[in-house]
Amino acid sequence: MRIGLLTEGGYPYASGESQAWCDRLVRGLTGHDFEVYALNARPCRDGRGGRRLPEHVRQVHGAPLWGDFPAAHLRAAEERRGRTPGRRARRRFGEHFGALVSAFAAAPAGGPPADREEAPDNALTGKADRFASGLYGLAEQAREHGGLPALLRSEDAVRTLEAVCHGPRALPAAHGAQVNDLLAVAEQLETALRPLSLDWYGDGPTPGLDAVDLCHATSGGAAALPGLLAKRFFGTPLLVTEYGVRLREHYLARAAAPISAPVRALLAAFQGALAAETYAQAALITPGNTHARRWQERCGADRARLRTVYPGMDAAPFAAVADAPADDSRTLVWVGAVEPAKDLVALLHAFAELRRTEPAATLRIVGGLGRDPQAPGYLAHCRALAAQLFPDEAADARTVGENPVSFEEIGGPDVPALADAYASAAVVVLSSVVEGFPRSLVEAMFCGRATVSTDAGAVCEVIGGTGLVVPPRNPRALAEACRALLGDPDRRARLGAAARARALELFTVEQNIAAFRGIYLELMSHAPARPAGRRHGRHAQALPRPFDRPAESHVPGRWAATGAAHRSGAAAGPGAPAGRTPSWAAPEQERGAGVPVMSEP
Image (cartoon, rainbow, N blue to C red; front, top):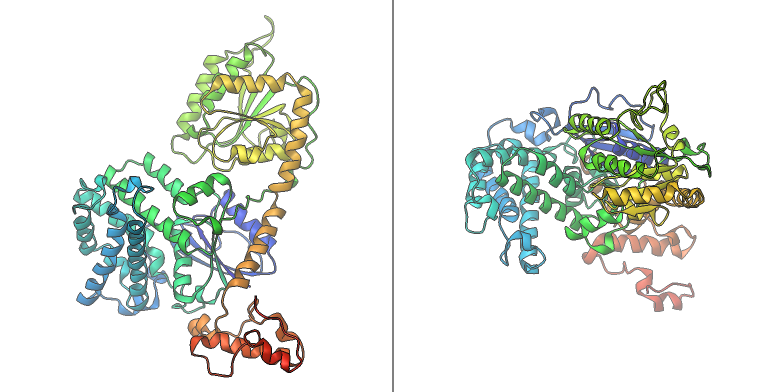
């Protein structure tokens, strides 16, 4: 099977957990061929990101989402034209772009967009249909005539945005949009819609998404756009995996960005409409946890096509960590990326509360800076707060004072590896106010450590009763939970053993790979067979296709003949010639010939 793996800002170019998950998936599914289609968020040194990929990764196609759009990535039609779009092209663009903008920038007929649950279903359906019509209309125009990037940056696009935003049915926040706001939105839309103009759809010198059997988008947003077009043009099934909901990430990023309210509202509406179309067209959606699943359901995803698949994590680095000793250890360990969402301030205040009754307790904060721009200043603030709350203490007049709170990084003399940090812990603490899938908790569970966590993101789902959970932003509750575990070594040992068993059952790489191996085969078994010439465009190849022939066609005798007739009739569709009736449609005839048959249920 040939898989088109669609990524954005990750594999194989960037480091981080999203890259690591894709790499583990590709290396685990050696029975399939992969082609990687990567949208790059930032420049990279070479086409494979300086990484040696497995042999069954046949091609890596990259396209930038930053700077000017290089002509090398445009469709052949785009390169052939090489001139300013004419009047007919501009008129066609205006129709499609107007439908797209009116779908996400205008409120539904039943009320404002914030009242999505109260709006009439037909109004929401009409908006979704207009968005799909505009999106695929732009894709068809780019495929046939090119010139879409220039049109999206043109004055026509800005005027279309202006007409919708200043119209009577516009979003309330968009009414005050100024010219600079409209220019900013048009620029962002051109970047977001770049996948429509790529040469990944059989228009380039080599086969593209027209030659794959399944598209697997590793996130929503821009990464899913090529999969939507592959389904539209070639009928290719689309699988969408979201371990961090792309729409949620967009909301959080835009809330912190220095942009105006109209720009924020319009871009959020566009991303919401794109997410809804992605969920509507995906054959299957695999969220990484229930928290992500709720987001997807609220954005319109059908529950019948949602299946939770937990991220696969490598348990091998933590296998050598011994069980927590049943002694009087008083060490708390926090592991993660230091940034405001982790709420280390609350953790430090909770530790100060704990020290009133546990003076021997120590706290190790292990980790580097997060990706948040405020992370360096936040780390400095936490260091200053720790120095203020816990002045260096000395046991006597001759001893050098030490602070009970230490800030450390992996690779240092005291923490050469991540497993060493967990091994030193009596209790592992998580204090986040915003959390997706809590990887540090799973690592602590692999190590058999009891945990105290705040109820954020998928924490409760991951812990599952093997640790203590308290409300976020509640230092007193956090301190009481830590005190309860520090004072009861037997309870810590029981929780740690249960946590390790749960993590090894649910969150390993092997579980993740096995789940996607079954999902790939399931989706392909339900996909209709397509003739090779249509399936591969001008790069037609006679490649074998899973489930292309029914099992009975391999049985000698009349089974093979009826199986061939079945395939011919199915391929011919409603206009199939007479006499091509499949065997299951005429059971009486087959029984009269003395051949056992199985009627269709």
